[in-house]
Image (cartoon, rainbow over all chains, first blue to last red; front, side, top):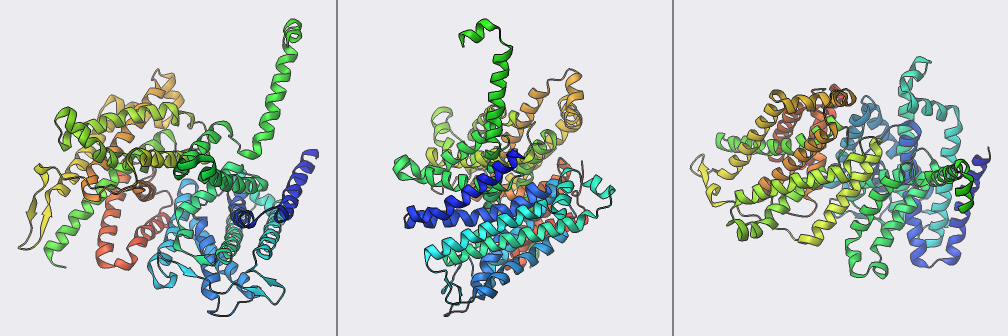
Length: 336
Length: 292
């Protein structure tokens, strides 16, 4: 129970820090952290599938991108759209696409599932990239950002920061509750042993499909926020690089924990910023992929359970060292 | 479409499909036998193409040059590269989960791309077609087909036959097949399975590098060329059925045909056709065409 309290305290502290951050940060910092929070929502959506249900989706960027494109395409040319309908619309379209993709691709398993979800994401990518619907390689601009009456003007960076933070918190709480619900327990069971779940009388397919659709909807929410933040969308949002990057985030953070997705998104983005920084690496910052790649390789070697597993790993090491000391002869212990 | 054009497109489809097969065969071997998802396999193709470009002056200075000497040097280097990589990185991945493998090999892609950028730069390069193969064959009064593309198909076919022979007819192939079925059992029968894996991995790398080298005069050499090949090769592997060489060959030829004719007949939908094909096949047969 105490570790559970520790986890909650950690997450509450993280959100408190995020809420206080704009007080000390400049324009650049607020912008960066807003972007990272959006990526964290995106990563959380995938964590529901990978960590929660055991379904590795390699096409998550499609739902993200569709959310973003719908936000831009449905916004009127010269007046602001209302958040009240634009946000639900983006989320629903992404969820609808996820429902179709899920319904078909859940027929396959394992690596085949990974590849089918990739295939459907590539289809969405090429539709946006090659047809007039998506505006081609150059992408499209969002001229006027949506508002909520006179209450919220998302054009102001600080208002948008607060809104994104609220959305991130809402998604986090939603997923935490979902995971503890009967539905979430059923997903757990499917992840561990789908055969046994079926034997105990669960029809697993609807559960998986529901999880897939919810995940797509949340990714769509992330995409919506992304489009509103930058006021610009292009087909690269749907590319497999994005699907890969978000997968890397949750693996780096630690699969199977919601806070892993949070930590992973921050770690990945901050590592990127670090290696890109000319202040630290000078002219070599141009080759920032090298540092990022090496860090990823080292983290696989040293962190088999991701960043989330780090405290447990340290504890195990301490306990191991202590027990080694305990069995050592008194003379050696005296030396130490 | 008149007959000559049709014939040209058929030959192009064959050449593209066979080239895909070469890269995908290494992928499906490493995947099927060792159970490692190797995202960095596309990088070996890229490394091959850059070798064909960057090694040529060096080979010319030391061995008197020639495209084929470059090929030989490149393949020799790639075997060493594969052997070292397996020893240094991949041998630690066999016991890990698939997602850990994805993470590490993704890291390797980034490292390979940046090392390439540091060593050779980010420019697009061309590689000259060797004079011996520079000619064309006339198909009609105005249309002709370059000999070099036929050469690519020929090399790929030879390698495919060679692989088939090694797998089905030699003692080494028998051990590899047995090793993929049951690692522990083969080990307990006295076969050095780690060495066997290392050989398979090195061979997979060498084949991908060779594919990149042979393709470089046609495709030119550019940054990021490995990534596009990687995704298509995964499609090939999955359509064919993971671990099945025969499946990979059939799937690669199928994709060659669909992609080549798609570009001619339905240019606006060409990019998506391959993925539609894959989705349809997997919905029909969720384990690929040939499940091994």
